Amino acid sequence: MTELKQAAALPGRGGPRRPRVRAPRRGVPVPLLVPGLLAMAFLLVPLLALLVRAPWRGLPSQLTSTEVWQALQLSLISATAATAVALVLGVPLAWLLARTEFPGRGLVRALVTLPLVLPPVVGGVALLLALGRNGVVGKSLDAWFGITLPFTTAGVVIAEAFVAMPFLVISVEGTLRAADPRYEEAATTLGASRFTAFRRVTLPLIAPGIAAGAVLAWARALGEFGATITFAGNFPGRTQTMPLAVYLALQNDPEAAIALSLILLAVSIAVLAGLRDRWMTGA
Image (cartoon, rainbow, N blue to C red; front, side):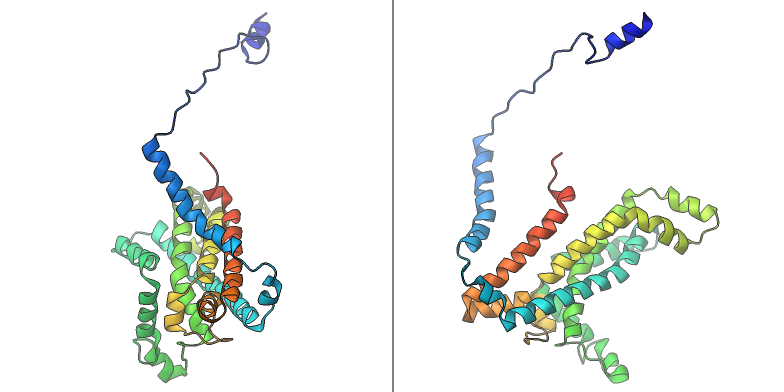
């Protein structure tokens, strides 16, 4: 008898059903609807215009040209190399910001995120002053090792890593702050060193955050323009990435500029689709 009462009390098993309370339909205020629609049009119309005006018939010939392939190949290689640099340097930096206490940590965090809001051209000028032949560090590199970074492919990688690394650091630091530090503490109490705990415990826990940050950094590096053209120049086959090729082609061959823009647009959509769990899910 008791079991029957319990079964009756369970929903969906013959017990009394509670009436469903429907949320009242709320109208959209016109003062919010109109600006919202205008903002949507402002963001979407330029992208739709790019698709509408694209030379679809001549697109294969545009994409198979030597200049486009050189820019595409250099962009992919340099963006991947810049992401690798960001991973090697940015993940330890994010761990220091999230897991350690030291004087001026807030200031360091602010300076690390500064390239996010710094105009890219200013970043390129700063790189020249630091790593140029007469720069603060570049002078020693040139005199002691014969290394010259500006206007080289390595300069492209450095410029892209400079603007892309903060995206990785912010993503990994946020993931570290959300992760439970007691797992690391338990590993250290069992005899593991701090580095072993980081390598065997922390890294697997924050792997999704590292992957998301790496994707963001790669996309940012692929689309970098200002710091690259200022620090590395615009030399076809050596420092001319896809954004620089778009800028140059827009003056001489607008159809080639549209074709390159479509590639960058496709990459951006792919990145957004890859991060859909973070940005495209509703609450």
